Length: 242
Picture 1 (cartoon, helix red, strand yellow):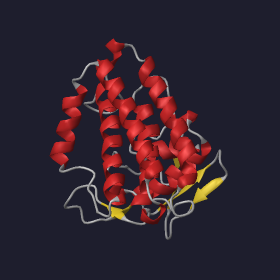
Picture 2 (tube, rainbow, N blue to C red):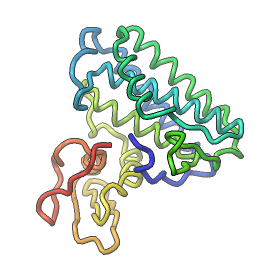
Picture 3 (cartoon, rainbow, N blue to C red):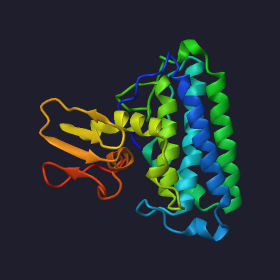
Picture 4 (cartoon, one colour):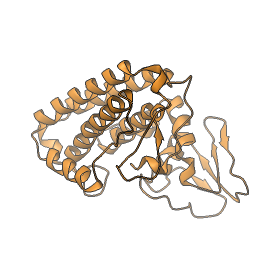
């Protein structure tokens, strides 16, 4: 995911702490799923091109570690970067994906604990401080966006594991927040979630995409083929993978 492609949802209160219980619940479900995977299945393909399930678990662990570092750095008064470089980020995933299943499980569990501890320790007055994805990234992202970013990482990549979890199991609150955050990826497109009674209107938009909210969120992440969705313009607009 490139956070610069995503408009951070507005926080609930200054810190967005109301999202924390949902994130903790999603994290627990993810960790249980990873723990239940047979060791031999870590080498199986995930839903992401070129990535095994081991790659997905490695990325989830490293993402938690990077966001923990962001929070620690921002709390100390800096403007930290998530990753030292894109190349280093990608290589770290490749390297960790080669670890044993046991090592991957332990790394994931340790990383989510460190991340949640950093959230709990974060000073309230620093939630409006900023961070960057890379040191040379032009966009400064607000610290309060971290919870939403991590929540999307956990829920969407849980599905990417291709281990029985689907977008249909996403809580409605997560679906709404994700559509609101990722709708910038479909400029000029009005979105109608037929199961939620919710719509997101695009100014001067002539295309309307309709269907179940979870499928809209999945499509906005650049996944699938728009199963369950219809467009009044015929073919669905193409969305770059998130």
